[in-house]
Each structure stands twice: as structure tokens, then as C-alpha cells.
Amino acid sequence: NNNMASQGLTYEGCNFFRQRLVLSTLSGKWVKIKNIRSKDDNPGLQDFEASFIRLMDKITNGTRIEINQTGTVLYYQPGLLYGGQVEHDCNPQRSVGYYLEALLMMAPFMKNPLRAVLRGVTNDQKDPSVDTLKVTAISLMKNFGIDGDGLELKIIKRGMPPGGGGEVLFTCPVRKTIRPVQLTEPGKIKRIRGTAYSVRVSPQMANRLVDSARSILNKFIPDIYIYTDHMKGGNAGMSPGFGLILVAETTNGTFLSAELASNPQGQGSPVLPEDLGRNCAKLLLEEVYRGGCVDSTNQSLALLYMTLGQQDVSKILLGPLSPYTIEFLRHIRDFFQIMFKIEVQKQEDDSCKGGDKVLMTCVGAGYANISKTLK
Amino acid sequence: CKEDEMEEEEGGAADSGHCSEEKEEEEEDEDDNDDDDDNEEEEDDDDDGKADEEEEQDEKDDEEEEEEEEDKEHAEDSDIETEIAAPMNISKKVGKSKAAMLLEETEEDDGDAGELGNESTGALKWKEGLAQKASEAFLRHQQAAPNLRKLVYGSVVEEQDSP
Image (cartoon, rainbow over all chains, first blue to last red; front, side, top):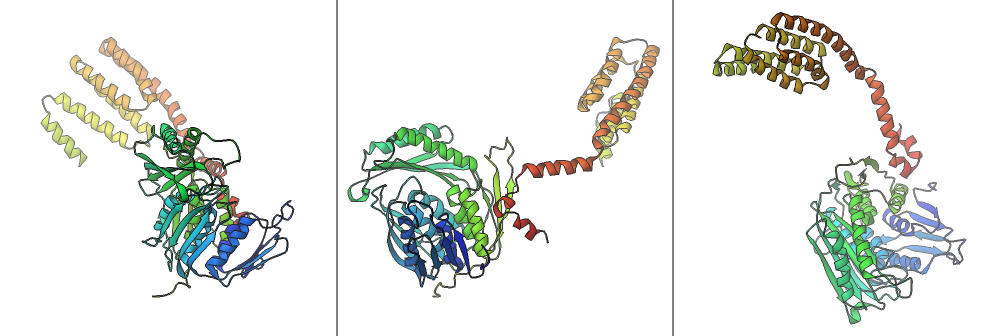
């Protein structure tokens, strides 16, 4: 696997596709992925992956992409991260969050500040929704010194699967270096915020979501506010649906999130907003139990910024590592030769701080954004 | 420094010579408590205190006070010692003649000495093989906590780390 590690890497299978392309682009190493669904009835790259490759092509300059006839082999030689104005129609098989997560990882390292308009599904059941990323990922980036007026994530139109039709604006400033962080004290939960959205269904759905989520959360903390967001007409996308995003904020500025969305139209049985609200509240409690300074959706983003930080020690306390994060750590080792120190911190039963935490420590690679133009 | 303070207090409450004596006893006991390491020394001093009591047993009013004092002191000590002390206090409350008391006390003292000897060997048992116990506990803890680094990066890491 690592024979040609200095120039490029070879992988097999369709898993962790985004990680590989993103890390390849950031490290400048080519990547070759073989046997992409080679034994599947529908072999090769799928539409949403092809769409992702097109997005990568748009934000870079000089990228070489070769795909074989059946789409089972991909060769990707990254170019320069260019940034600037980008518009992209995301495939509705995956939500905008799928594409946005990759952009969040690369945006600070571009030549020009990124201003991306992404169209497609804003909220679905698979990927982190734009609402969640707006609260959790954006505030996480501020910890690493990526902030200012230029950092914005805005939902212009909402779109639910299968039709989509949403629109999102993401702008991000560029940075020469990333600041190392020491996030080891998660603090205590001080407030819970949320958004209950509904499109092309009765606006009452959002209120029912709020009531049912509150029925569980009110027992724990008084400071709860859940916004209702009912978009109409042209801003409501193509398909009906509703959902709930809950975010717990701690005294130290950590955001822990949970979300649920209704089944897409024509798929699965209809979901009662009461059930969805209650389940989402329970998911939030679960996330609070897992704890840490970064919620489980953004673990890999935080670890990437730590890796690419200045040559200084970064520490971060996480909840239990997600399988995706574990694979991400392996990929970071492959592309950047950086390994984290991973220490389990056992919790005493009476400490009331939830499950076991993991302290991640690394020395940054000293990655400098050489393509950034000097002014 | 500490002794000076105690002396000042004595001067303040010098209504009767007896009270001051009690305080001296207290002082002794407190000093003993400071060095917890040596069990036997403590026991010896306790005995001395009892001997003092016997001399002053004519004043019955004071005796009760003393007993209370003693009870407190014993309550502060470990459970084992209070158990030993309990029969002694009861015998005093019965209020026999001085000679009989002395006899009983000496008998009890002998018995105490034997018992305490056993207890002290028992108390010292936890000190045996401390290093071994510590290493066992460490290994047990090490096995209970999964080595996440190994799980994430595989066994290759260990080889790279060792040099």
C-alpha cells in the first residue's frame, strides 16, 4: 500500500472516497483507487461520486482525472487548490452536506477565498445537514483561527429528498497557517438551541416537533429555544418533508449536535413528528453522554486541522472515536506521516461526565498554504 | 511553636492544676497521632495515660470527665482500638476499690498487649509485597484499557515506537 508513498497511494474499494481525494489534494500526492464496486450489480463510480469529482475539478486548477470504461478504477492527480467563485449542482442521491464536508476541509488552504453555491438536497437522513454544519463546524473552525466576516454558511433554499431543489451559500476566508489548539475542557451544557424545519407540509409539523423534543429536554435544562423554520413557495424545494436539529452548547463553546429527518416522500412509512422529536432529543442526550470538545460529526475535521497546523502540539478531547474517524486517522498517516497520540481517559462513575473520553495529541505538519496570494 | 501555643492556653485556663495535666496528656497523644507509622509507640503512650488516670482516681468528678475525654480520643482512633478500650471503660464505671482496679487494669493491660501484638502484625500484612501488587494492578489496568493507538494504527506502530 505504501510502496510509492512519496508520490502517491493506491487503494481498493469505494469506501472513504471523499477522504482519499481530499487528503490527496491537500498533500499533493496522487491517488489510485481500484476495484470500485467491481463485483456489484451496478459497478463503478456512482452518480454522486462523479458529481463529487466534478466539484473537486471546479475548485482546483490542473487536476488530472482518469477513469476507466466501467468506472471501477480512478486515477486522481491533484492540481492547485484555486477556490474563487464556484457553482455546483450536487447530485440528489446525497445531500449538500456530503459535498460541504469536503469543502470545509479544503477551503482555508485555497489560493482565493472560496465562494461556493451548492444546489441540491439540504437535509436528508444520511449526511450531516447544512443546519448542523452551520452551527458545529463553523464554530469549530473559529477555534483554529479561521474566522472573520468571510466565514459564512447560509441556507437560501431548503430541499428535501428525493427532489432536492435547495440552495446553500458557503464562503470561507483563506489562511496561510492554521493555529494549533488545546481543547481539553468541554465544560458543562449551558443551553440547547435547535431548528425545526418543515417544507411543503403543514407548518404545524414544526410546532409538534418542538413540543415533543421539549417534553424530554425540559427536565434537564431551562435554557432551551427551538426555532421553527417553515419555508414556502420557491424556497421550499421540490419534495415535502420535515426534520429537527438540536444543538447543545457548553460553557466552553463546544457544540454537540443531533438531528433527524422524516422519510423521503414515497420511501418508507410516514413518520409522526412527535416520534421524530422525541427520538432526536434522545439522540442529543446520547451525544452529550459521548461528549468531548468536538461532536462526533466533526471529529475528522478537527483532526485534519490539527494535522495541518503549525509545527506545535495540538491537543483535543474527543468522545468515543467514530469508525469514520478511525479510518480517517489511518489515511492521515498514509498521506502526511502523522500519527496521533491516543489516550483513553476513564471516567469515574460519579463524575457525571458521560462515557470514556479520548485525548488526541499530535504535532502539526507545519503545513503552509503556499498558493495563497500575498497582498 | 506548637508547644508554645499550648502553654499559652494552659495559662489562660489555669483554674485547676488537673485541667492542665489533661491538656498535657492531650498534647502527648496528638504528637503520637502525628507519626502514624509506628503503631506500637502509640499503644505504649496510651498505657501511660491510663497509669496517670489511676493515680487521680480519688477525684471522682474529674474521673468522669476524663472518661469522656478518653472516649473521644478513642473514637478518633481506628475501630480496633476502640474495641479494645471498651471493656476497660465499663470496668471503671462499675467503680470498685482502687486496689482491685489496679489489679484488673494490669491484667487487662497484659491482655491488651497480647492482642495488640497480633493486631499490629495483621495491620502490617498489607505492606507485604507492595511493589508486586502495584505491578499487578498496573498490568490489570493496562489490559482493561484498550490500546486505542494499536487498534487504530495496527501493530506496525509498536515497532516504530520502540526505538
